[in-house]
Length: 192
Figure 1 (cartoon, one colour):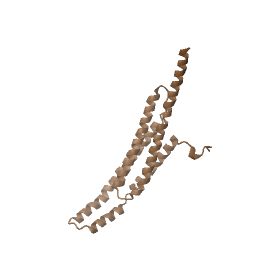
Figure 2: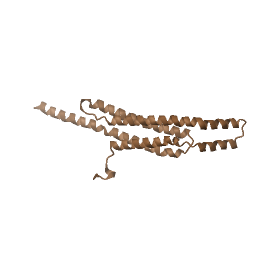
Figure 3: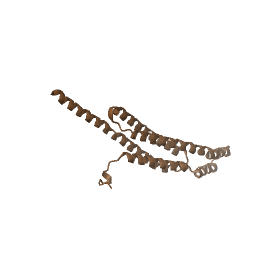
Figure 4: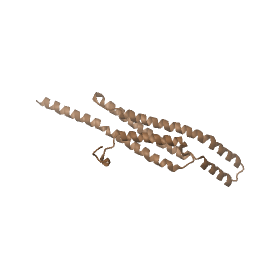
């Protein structure tokens, strides 16, 4: 056990990985449950429309609505399941790739830039995921409130990834300190 109280411990790279994995599992579970698509809710809406509308082609409109309910939403859910999984896979891959780069040596600056680029792409994929979930919530009939937790979870994960990215500045700081030490040592030798 650690002697540092939990509230005073620094957040670390594993926390970002842990929450990213957790987010991936939760969104996969949401997709397995058809993103909360509620067929009965849409059927009730169609029935109300049928009850309250007095247009000539009411039966044709209702038939189109039911056909859309049967085919479109099933295809939509399948497509969005593939898309959200793809976005999440890319986010995880970019984060893990970036997080696995430890800048050092002569290529420190290039490795630092590469690390930062991958972490930036991970953040970009997380924003794309947030937007995709918003789109799904807008299109599918169902409980929109179930998406609120995902927005917060994605926001938290973005913050953690940015924290990992910010923590990488230590590599540059260490490099600058080494350069300063070398300059001081070289400067003293030149003065003698």
